[in-house]
Image (cartoon, rainbow over all chains, first blue to last red; front, side, top):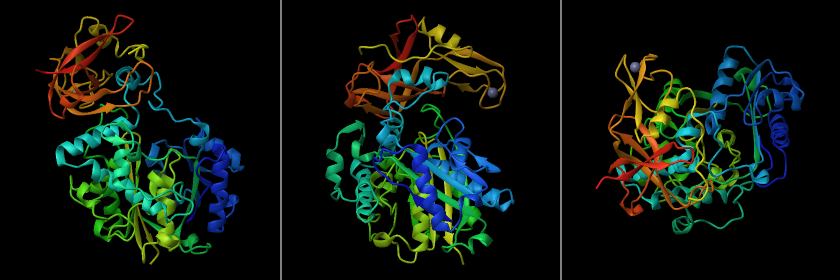
Length: 375
Length: 133
Ligand SMILES: [Zn+2]
């Protein structure tokens, strides 16, 4: 694998330019060139995302995938790329992403609802913030069922900031540490979620190159191996979610663990989607790191902060590192760096296995990937 | 609420549902093949795949599955703070809606609610919910 991100933050760059930066750096990281790429996996660019990006890069891939599954897209792409490579359908797969939403001010509080969808008739009339209000209702339900508190949710944002202070490219690298009180004092957006329970809005691009283990052995960096993956999709609208606190992540995780032949206790580092603080609690339960309903207590008392017993979102996550709309590719990038021992001050000593979990839409799409060092 | 709420036009699948709102009747779909109830209206039963679906009138009573008080409006029609909720009808289907006429502090998960109606400019009505006293 080769991995890289583009410039992050407020860049003034275009979507395609940010992709190009990341791709060029990832090729350099792997020791590959554009002409080696025969598979392209990208989304969120335009109606014909893969075609658009292929043309911009001047490549003619023979295997493409432009599935739009929001924050889970790139864990899904990693799975689909791995299987395509395993089947001999492509040799070098490029996963590429870019978004300039901070510079372009393209984010809307109510989200983007197409006029012909059921949501335009049955949900938009009630004024939910999209996606925030759905995650807020999941948090409210989690509190109701399990006694989870706003303080426990805030612990996730506090830990993310602490990790970001160790990541020189993080958007909040030069910010102050965060306290639980800071999070609770930030403006309420959609109860019980405060502004600091919500991820950043930044620009950014990322790229991941995937190839066969055989070919990877000849590349610049030591291989990182895809050990298992799983995915599922559960709902598009808010009213159609099967369960607010028992998400599709249970399904994607169990499939990934089964394929890898591993369980939660075998995982050294976890990179899970933190669109909102509640997202992380739901994922930790679904990924089996604690029992259902116990994630609030699990993230407390410093367990997930640097030096704690459970290294989580070591890049600073979407809450404090970057969040250019679809963060899933950055989960993969950080996991690969951790497994190669390249994460500097935030390195988890001896990390040999990592789990990445992407959650997209409004708890809509769920994809889990388990990575490991080559042994 | 100043501007009109953003409500898309009815389509071939949803026309009868919206027409019933003009008479303050809340419909859900019922599958004649397997008995499943569902909402929003669509062309097949999500339980068994049958196309043999009819509209039936719902009781209008349900419970709050969850809710959120929205503090920043996504559209000029909305004046925060206001309550957005997932309401599970007695018949089973879940609707996104608003809880109206209640102190926000009185809204809780699992409390009982009943349908109320808010007029739309085009003569349709929008089902919202109030707490059952
Ligand atoms: Zn049926």
